[in-house]
Image (tube, rainbow, N blue to C red; front, top):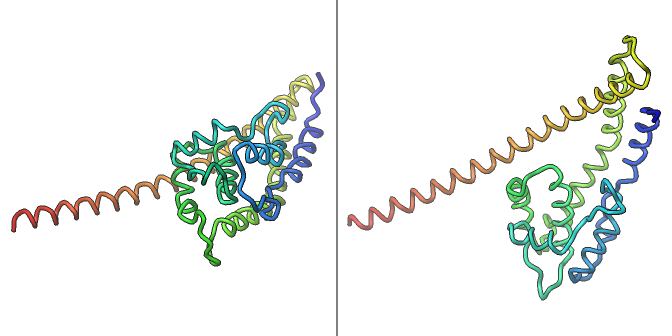
Length: 221
């Protein structure tokens, strides 16, 4: 089979522009039952999956597991609100990169704003801010992909090997560049989250030690 790396690269870049987040105004303003929620998520995010015809965006089992792992507040009278939907969208994107524990750490501040109608800071405003940043990042991301791809084409170019083999090795170089980029960013995210967790644990231990000390003082009086 003939490999056309240029066509593949152009196809990927074109697809990036079609992977759009769900606009806040497109989210239902009424609470949804489980089946309605999974259907909505599937219809709006299916194109972001690797195999749209078979991959599941969200299932009842997934939602129950998220609730069990304290990622998602329970429904109210079996219905899920817009705030539930926002949290689920964040979880959907994060789960491809982070562990359950890391997602717990990351979205704790969001859960604290769950069903908060504060005009200054609520989940709707947090959601809009996050995806405005995503939109701003699209063009720089495409430019970076092109730069990495052009660099990969310089590898193995002077070797006297079959043209198809050369293309395969150049694609290997491209994937290696992308993988290193993902690895470094994932490492940075994990270090940031570990730092947050360590600080929270230190604060809890400090409070426990203080409470124990006060208890001992009362006992000695």
